[in-house]
Length: 281
Image (cartoon, rainbow, N blue to C red; front, side):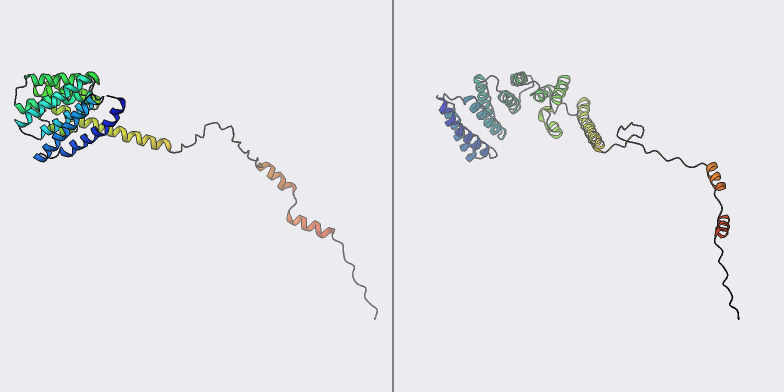
């Protein structure tokens, strides 16, 4: 298959994926007929194409979702077909992470649909797929492994896997954890309740730290008051003029003539006006 052919078939793959997603919510015969067309599209794209691994994966995912909407025994064959597609995908691309995870999920779902005991080989197959996924990306399937251990009531291993999923940030929402059918054997146990309580406590602490960090950031933005004892090389202190002492004030008072004395001196120094001559009568 030429390099150009890969590009020409990519739009067909995208169209098939969209068609599968559109038919997924429905469970009637029309949806089944539409999915048959999708599967044929996937098969056509695969032939000698470099996109065959991606095609197989999406083919498997479409089968997996279809099986989830069916009841046994119809769902059983669809699950098996999905597992086969995932396995073929990983034969082409051994590091196809999503295929490893979904293959394990399909094995768990098939085991539940068949009602087999926890020791059945299907659960072992699921475990191997989840471990393979963790080998590709550490901790990515930790919660899936917790579900596997939950089915087998392996409490310690289940808790360790839950802690790993928490550490890696791969835990679902609390409601989804509590509603997971694979954890029904452990949800009422004290260690599990303590773990769920720790999630709530961790969120509370994280929220408090976030609020404290925001408060500190706002406080840092406020102008800081100036330290009066801090040396400022650009500040010149204005010197105050010395005030006259009381002694000097008293001396000045003694030396300065009073108002009455000034008036007497001025009168004494003023010229005396001559009296006008009287005419003889």
